[in-house]
Image (tube, rainbow, N blue to C red; front, side, top):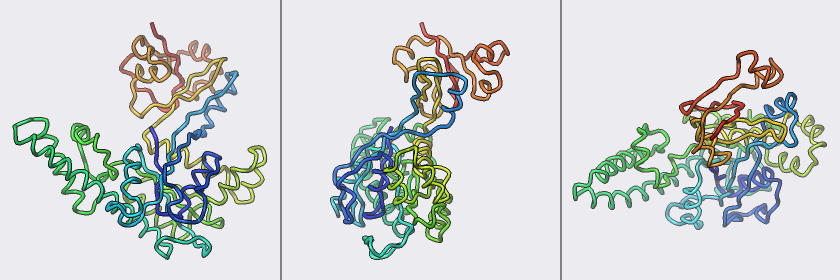
Length: 362
């Protein structure tokens, strides 16, 4: 699964992406449409639980979870009608599983704004409207196809048409689909359409160096809006994070202290992106490695085992499970077992975030 970084031109998308992936590209210049083809990168998801596990189990290596990010070109008003190569850029958004929308929440006369003034709520409205218009176009096309098939009495087409009509009515009230209640069968009917306003959303407020916690009036408006629409929110100063990315890890502490940060804001962003994608981690721990494995929330044990190796899902027998708290209390897996805290779970078990698992397969 992957998340796409979107926003208007010159809001700091590529700066954030480069800092996250600790990369540089020609896309950091101060002009619109500097990103044409989407850049892709894989980032680690910081998780202090890995460090705590290695206090009790010493491995040869530690492997954290990762998440894939895609830096998508800036969207402008009229993108749904092809403005600014809009159709091409919108197709990139359709391909991702979640949207990270970067919103500019700082004033700087040296960094131009595509609309001439810094107004994060207007920026949010522009992008939301373009995505809704593009979704309407996609659904209207699907409506025509489903309608022809439905007239022949095809039951599946009739059901699909009903969901399409429901979604179109919602969008035409200028409300994104993520605020529409759909049943699981209804979602399945339209899953292949890549509807953008149905995707989970995280707002990333790009703030100034003197507002690292995002308490300014501009950032507060975005925070409150995000809470109202059920979206996530993270405040990040792209310029600070860009500098931090160029400093050796062992030397970052002093710079973080200077800005009053406990950790890079990009660590928080990585974890929130992971959560927005609906992902969680379980761990395996042994002498060879301590590793975080990524699964969607709600994954059953056999499917979780299949992430390690596809054969493990087919040959799954059971899983031994304990928690980090168990490990802290008892010190080892053997002692956890002796204390009667080692759980033995079967195929119906839903793996929980933070479970430490030992799968038994045939």
